[in-house]
Length: 506
Ligand code: ZN
Image 1: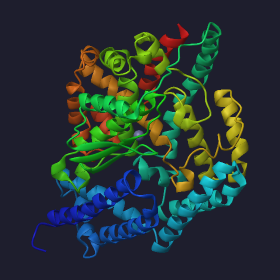
Image 2 (image 1 turned 180 degrees about the horizontal axis):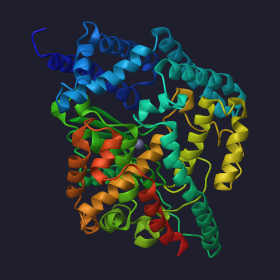
Image 3 (image 1 turned 45 degrees about the horizontal axis):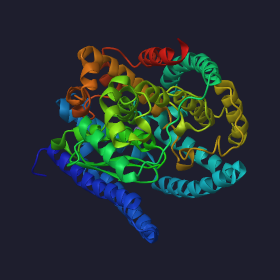
Image 4 (image 1 turned 90 degrees about the horizontal axis):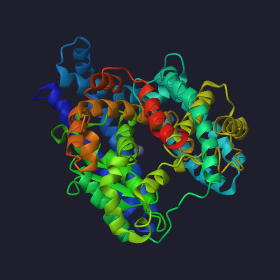
């Protein structure tokens, strides 16, 4: 080895990242472009490439390079950015080497089968069909936790993959604060909506909105708020996503409903938030943790900030509503801006998480977090899930779930082996609120700027405070650094209380 060990490590990491970029591109192509018959061949190519990536990554330490660097790190002999690269690489490496290859293969196979069975079970509304596979996944996940090791709960080892540093206990603490606020708040709103609709139906948005026109409007907004369309694309898929191939090539997708332009708009804004983060990562450090996102929760804070805090606000639509009216004179010319704002911010308890509003959404997540934590800790049995689900929905939302397809079978996550993932959605909201309050303090004119269509300062603030740091700080450090306080649900609660208290409870 002729170069410095840290440079050699960077080189090896970059080589792995090139393969990851190719894998991402294959996946994007599968979801956006690929002809239907290509699906089996593509699955085989993807599995093969994923195996190569795994091998290449673990062989980083075949000559002890990473182990030596880790020793230097422990002796505090590495400077800041080098320390980040080594500690973050070690975190991933250490987890992977603790999992026996046979176990990884068994898990991958189980997940792939469970996913197929789940899709059938959901369609047939047959939980019993899925039950043995769910039980198998829970067994495997507990085993994974045992291999990896944990503090007080096996759930700690699972959430750590998605939200490094968070545990069952720290997650429960912030989410319980939120729950205590949300349950009575949602009940009050539900009672008040009933009063409102008793006075007469609210004006709905009805009409025909051609896809090309929706796409043009969405693209105009995306460009205006700072998404670089020369370093990214927007396409259509069944399930919207954002995917970074490189900070100079970020793909986002949306889906269309020809009778509701806000459907594609909401997902475009959400994914553009993710996309801006990916475009803001420092390209010069590509391939190393310095150019990777901090955690799923921090990633989600970026999408939620744009989608909810900004694009569902009055100042945002003061600027964009006239443009929407011009693009779709029918029906928007006849709908006053304030009615539009209210329609957009409608709150209503509902069965399906992905269709819920920004207030009730978090209670859906809390319910899932409590259940998956219980499953992993052994306090809830998988066979009791339909019952547990229904009773929690009744208790939290006051509604009766009619079928398991509209209940416990609705989400893909558990069948995909994603346990410990759900909380990151709500953590994203909490981070977003805390960052947003700080941003508003730093930029007292923000609302006026938004109303004038000036989004540059927001993008710069996010770049400077969040995007450009990659994984230099952990999520907990980043929140403290930016806002001067550890993560708390206080700011999100204040935000909901002010906005929705005003809309529904005054
Ligand atoms: Zn998201």
